[in-house]
Length: 219
Image 1 (cartoon, rainbow, N blue to C red):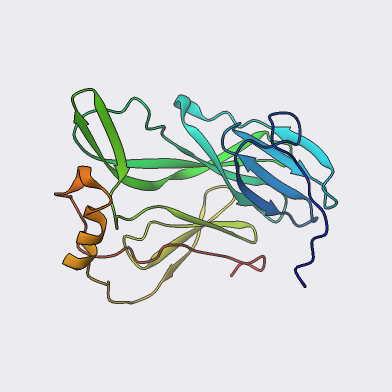
Image 2 (image 1 turned 30 degrees about the vertical axis):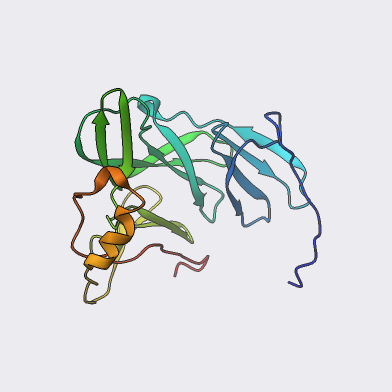
């Protein structure tokens, strides 16, 4: 609580308990630590004192990339997939969807919860050069684990859907709010940074939210 450094674990590398690109870390209910290395595509589990316990390598379908979301109260691990953008060419917009997967604490695949929106992207090809970028201000998938449920919203509206671990709908959270309009000044601010999408397409309103969070009590 005071910010005093207590201990460190893991070093740069590809061996057991090492990291090349630490993407996410989560503390589980038994105080063990769950980590995900995006470069190595590896989930690693450490004890509270930093002692390395075990890894597992998710095996997503269709050569998709895996990314860790969090863990449920019972230790089940929640992750999702994303399509790699390497090799994508052409001109136009695309909407990526993701499957949410449930693994047990040992990494064994148990179930999938469903497919949800990840992100809207735009592809541009000019000669031998291809680029794929997220469309600025477009809705994108946001996840939260709350107690023994997984909640998801894509920002298209002010609502979040929550699911039981077996994929059954649990409840819907909805708030009545007026969407915020995207102005010409907002668009000018991104045109300078994304030269390949000068003409859009751009949405008319900001996403309803940029992140969602949950607590262990289910809220």
